[in-house]
Each structure stands twice: as C-alpha cells, then as structure tokens.
Length: 272
Ligand code: 6GU
Image 1 (cartoon, rainbow, N blue to C red):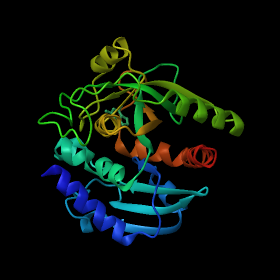
Image 2: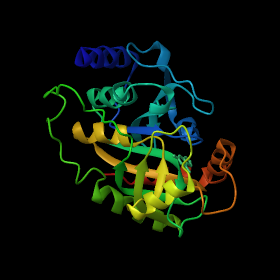
Image 3: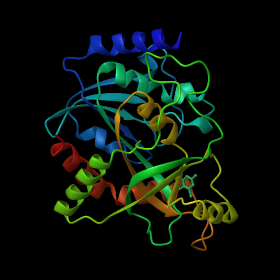
Image 4: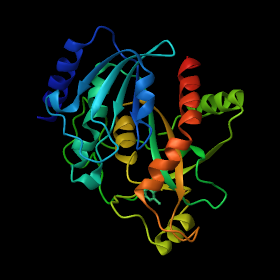
C-alpha cells in the first residue's frame, strides 16, 4: 500500500540521517547547484531508496541531499520526476509524501519555465502566486487515505501569502527584481504552439512548465507550506521569433544561477 511505501522510504532515509530536516527543496532543471551549497551534506541516491522511482532526464541528478543551509536543516531533491517521463502522478509526488513523513513543514519548489507574460524577460525569477493544472490528471485521483489529507482539499491558498511576502522582502534586501504570477503546468514533453501560448495567456497564465503542479497539489493536501519559484528560462512560443530548445533553458538558468542561489539562500536564512 501507498502509505506503507512512504513509511519504508522514510525509515530508510531516517536511518541514514543524523539530524531531522524541517525544510524541503525541489530543485528544477539547471537549478540543482543549490544542492552543492548544503553543508555537512549527506547524499542518498534515489535508486537506493525503497519505492523511489529513478530519474532519467539529462541535466537532472537523482539524489537527495540532506544537511545545513544558512543554519537550517534542509532536505533537497537534486532532480525530480516528471510526468512526461512516463511516471504516474503518484510516483512524481512520492518524494513529497516522504519529505512530509520525515517532518518537513515547508517546501520551496523551483522550476525552469517559459514566459507567457510579455512583460517578462528570460532570466527573470517569478514567485508563483497560483497555478493552473493543465495536465489532465491529478495525483489525488483514486481512494483517499485520510491519514495523508482530506478527500476534497482546498486549493485556494496553495502558495502561502506570508511566504511570498517574505521572499519579496528578501529580494528587496538583495536589490533583486522578481516577478509574480500564475504558473501553468502542462504535461510536455513538447513545448507549446504559439496558439496554445495565446490561449494560456487568455486563461491567466504568466509562465508555463512541465512540473511543480503535481508536487504542490500533494504538498497542499499534506498541509505543507509552499513557496514556488520559477526561473523564466526563455519566452514561450510565438513571443520571440526563435525556436525553443532545452539547451536554451539550461543556458539561461546557468546565467541566473548566482541570483537564484543568493535569493533562495536569503529566503532560507531569514525564514522564521
Ligand atoms: Cl516554453 N513550455 C513548457 N511547457 N516548459 C518549459 C518551457 C516552455 N520553457 C521551459 N520549460
């Protein structure tokens, strides 16, 4: 059963650990470098953890890094599971369940995303204020385990307002300009057509990507406080007259790496 799998994975990880993490981090495409900043790191490969799926995509490592960052006990996923890789929604979100079982209270979820909002530029960082689940699936479909969360979870406060304000004041302190907006979760693996991007803009989307939504739904279900940060790695289709490539996504996230690192570290340092 699902809950026993979570417990087994949790017990395995706990047996490796010397301290209990309170903050989770999911590091997206090109953003895994934050994991390298963790002090006294303990790393656990996904493949060694019972019931964990294995990560396949290029540019994504597949390991947990547990240790201290800015004085806080953190557990970071360097590499995540994407729905487009063929994993089920339950597999994609399994690590969030395990982090909850390990005792985390808050999670910072990051991703690389395409800019839909024409006021955005590649290299911008965007605080996610809300999302649109456009994946045609939901990790909570099926029988509900009431130990994990309620049958019909409220999704009106997924992205914690106080956490967003906290991040904004950290950005101010660093003199960093950050955008705010709505993240659309698409399945991928294709990038969208220009017509689809126009549709998503009409629907209220500001950025689009292929992750985050499943994990945040499960975090909400589990009562974990969420902060979402998108790195706008490129403009989505039809805005600039240039084709989209995964290389561009990686290249841009490498360019904003420093800003991203400083930003997230400040957020963690000042977290209460
Ligand atoms: Cl334009 N679309 C999607 N779905 N994911 C992305 C992206 C675009 N740019 C980076 N990731």
